[in-house]
Structures are given as structure tokens and as C-alpha cells.
Length: 125
Length: 107
Image (tube, rainbow over all chains, first blue to last red; front, side, top):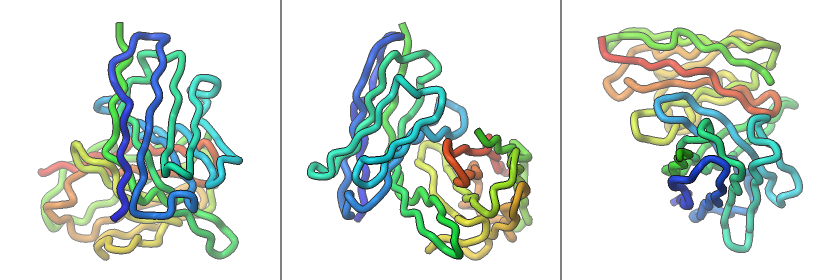
């Protein structure tokens, strides 16, 4: 059974830092792109970052570039998000998400098929 | 970044109704679009990829259509378990962007 379990969230002051972790099990972690997606309380979904299987490619939404860093340790089946210089608007549930993307007819598609339960980050003084 | 405009933001419907949700992209995205369902307090679940490909295990009452800039998710006969929020997601390029969501409520 595929499982993604996030941890590391909590209450942090503006300007503070946290390291979010995601423990993966039930699948070959090193074979998949992985993502972080967040959701502010009562709001919609926002994609945050992705990392390629071997960590050689990463991408971020503009609002977190230079502040957040996605990484992975395939030996530990773990995904991470280092979040620095936190702002009130970063308050959200952060989901660890697997991408089982595929290619068909010359196009390649992202499919976010497994999501963790999320970890809440609250930025407040 | 590509903007995804989803409408309506909410709707009220009854069991058995046909429900249609629309997503418009700020530029052409071929058919690089997925639909996700989210129930309160739960993580989202993927319903459709590539605009119209139903994911394994998703009931056939869900269907997707569209290409370019306009896309539609249709629920042919709304069931009690379908009351939830729905989001489109463009995966044409990064940053991936979601629509604002549509909350389907009981009429």
C-alpha cells in the first residue's frame, strides 16, 4: 500500500524556518517525481515545488523561490522541504504528492496520484 | 504563469442532477489538464488526466472534455458521495497551476 506521511509542521514566527519531511513507503520511491502542494486554510490548492527522481531537476512556484528548497534522499525513501524566511501567507497545510506521470501521443502528463495527509505550517507572531 | 479560471466557484445541486464545471486557461495548454476532487478534511484525489482520461477506479459518471483553453468536467448523475470541491490543474508547463475550485453543495 502506498503511503506518504508528512511531518515537521508547526507554529513558527515570521522569518523563521522549518524542515518538512515526507516518509514514503509501498512503492519504489526513487522511480517517481515528487511534489509539494499546499493549501491555505479555507482556500484552494497551490503547487509549490517538484523534484525529479534523481534530484537533478527542481522547480518552484515564484512566490517561494529563494526561500524554499526541495530535496530527497532515495536511500531513506524521504522527501523534504526546507522552508525559510516564512511569511504569514505561507500558512497552509503542506502535502507531499507523488507524480505518476505518463507520456502518450507525444505529450507527457502529470498525474498527482497519491497524497499524504498533510502537515500544517502556521506562521504567526 | 498560466492562469486557470474555474467556474462556477460554487453550485447547489441534487442527487441525480447533471453537473458541469468549466476551466479556462489564460493560454493554450493542448490537453494538459487534470481534474481533482477534494472532500472536507481530506487530501485531493485525481479523477481525470489529459483532459479526458478517466483514472482507474473513478466512476464512469465523471467525464472530461476540452482542448486548448476551455475544459469541462461533467458529472452525469450526481451521487451523494460526489458533494465535494473540484479543482482543475494545468500541467502544460511549470509552475503547475490549479483553478480556484468549485464547491458542489446539496441543494
